[in-house]
Image 1 (cartoon, rainbow, N blue to C red):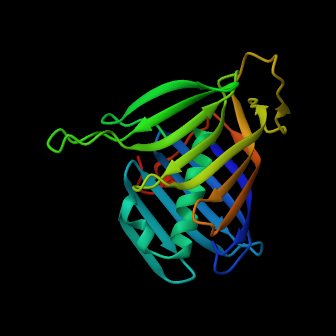
Image 2 (image 1 turned 30 degrees about the vertical axis):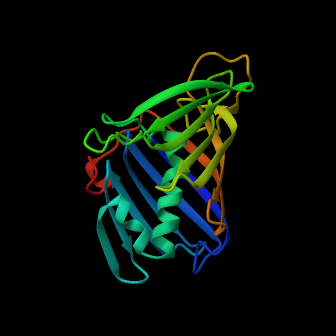
Amino acid sequence: MKGLFTAKVRGGLMPISTRVEGTVHFRRPNALRLRGFTSFGNELFEFVQGDDWYKLRLPMEGKVYAGRQSDMKELGKLARFSQLSAWAVGGVLGTSSIGKEETASVVEDGDRYRLDVYASSSHATGAAPQAIRRLWFDHRLLLVQEDRLAVDGEVDATIRYDDFRLLENSTISPSRTTVEQQHGLVRPFKVSLEDGHGQGTIQVTFHELHHNQVIRAEDLGQAS
């Protein structure tokens, strides 16, 4: 899948720009490439994800980082923005899959279903499984909200999905979907993310989303 989007940033998440034009390439769960540009076309960042591995390139700073995603929090605001952006588009593309060592449970939560995802517990310590994500689905089984949880159990980020549309096999703008539509691939074209630490918000609007696209190795950087 390929997509074009605009992200509007409020608060202190971005040290430079408050508006980012971006592209995303996605081939499989947990493998994507994000690129962000200023309104003048200058590249702000390139973020490549391959499962728990990442590479972050910051052309304006002349720096490249790589390693485990859990270590990204030490890299500053652009790294944080890149991680939050990846989480935001993850729900659109289906990248946040449940790991082999993770467990999940489903409960009814009002007029929605809530899926709680837990990290694997340590049998050596006997510790209870730790919740790491909560996902809410509406009656159409469409993902409408996701909470990312920190190690201390506090909300690290809240992501909400809206403006669901039916994707079409053409370059024409996708038509808006209705509750009655049962066929085809439906994806949200608007995503809002709120930082759980009060650092700001990101509003993502997709202009194009195309599925069943040929994704070359160079489109994903090192992710495969």
